[in-house]
Image 1 (tube, rainbow, N blue to C red):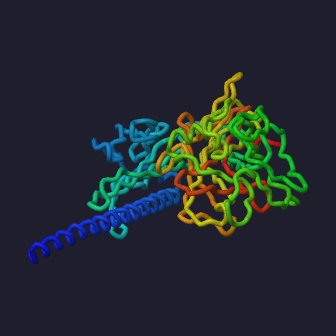
Image 2 (cartoon, rainbow, N blue to C red; image 1 turned 45 degrees about the horizontal axis):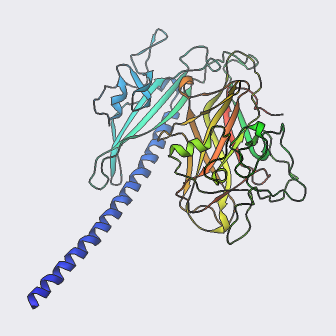
Amino acid sequence: MTIVEVVVAGLILVVGGLGVLGIVDAASRSTFRAEQSQVVSNVLQQEIEKLRALPYEELALEELPLHASDPEDPRSRIASTSFFYAGRNGTGLKPLVYNGGISEGETIEGGAVDPGPAEFEVGNVRGRVYRYVVWDTCPSALCQDGRHLKRAVVAVRLDQTASGGVRRYQEIQGQFVDPDAEPAILPEQNPGGSDDEGWTLWLTDTPCSEVARQPPPAVEGDHPTRNTRGDCADGAQAGAVPGAPDLLWPEAAAEEVDLPYDYATDVEPQAGNGDEGLQLLPGTNCEDPAATELAVGVASDPDPDPDAYQKVHRWLSPPVPPHEGSQDLLLTGEGTLNLWTRTLGEAVYPGRICAWLFVRSRAGDSVTDTLAVNLGPPLSLHFAHFAQSWPSTKWDEIALPLTFGYADEGGALPLPPGSQLGLALSVDDDTPSALQVHYDMPTFDSRIHLTTTGAPPPGP
């Protein structure tokens, strides 16, 4: 009996030990994969910054890279002297810029970009860096010909490890404009000067059915959450009825506005200090197509989900006025979204806020929302900011870098006359509770900044 008891006890000890070892192993793998992700992000950012430091004429490959058949290898996107810049599935074919190649009848030389693969090692994370430079489509508003805009693509592929597993490569892209390029339009500017103009549009609490930003009431401006899933003609609506988005306005709030308004009195904290600004309830995962469908498009009927309007909020700029020249006004693909935010009721929890950038255009009675594509990495239809501990005890400003593209314009987003620039915000479902966003006040000046091809923003 004693031997049997010892054997049973030993078996229990072994089984328990295996369970503990399994938990430790899973935790180690998760930690290592998080470390890998951080290293990849850092390496990609360092590589693109190194390229930005190069003179424009040296932004070319030292030699023509060779094709690889492995679809998990970035070199699989090489097609002779061209490169599929838009994705792994063979889209967005652009000619490579390399020493020995021909551009405008002249041989390219002086390129200083090593295509790789170049090995790197950071701690116990190892991998390879791949670099590519392609000629990008240069809109005529920027260039007199098609050889004044380059796109750099940097990819990182990690070595396979037992703890990290097999991971697909990640990439980052950036556009580079020839500083000596002369604009084909905007003749009032000096040759060789920049024809870019920065837009700053502030988030307001005014429905876009108004032709100008409305000052808040002098005493009390609190109101329930507005339903912004309709069009401007629908006017201000609350509850499940789709209504007008709020205005993106090219002027900051007046300095005399200093009252803390609550733009969502129907979403209140159960404890803690009172809430201010807009409170957004967690919705679906931002990667889910359902989240994108909620962020764009014009709703004509109430949603099956009665809380849908509390999970997404939209803003629209005034219509783009007619401008000089036959070419559309273009967003050049760079910008920043600044938001003042905090948790609800001073509670401490992680948070993820998502943003969609789109252009709303009209053809008769038809309304179309065209999404800007986040060039990543990774490529997606939205932009996101995550924090393990979202600001809770005070309002804090976060910044979402915006690097986006549009296939038909080589990275730029066209804004034809009459169209409107749109912004949608939502909270990911990995956030335990609502997040607050404050705006339309001098102190809490949530805003979006974008660069364009030289026209003033729509507004007054």
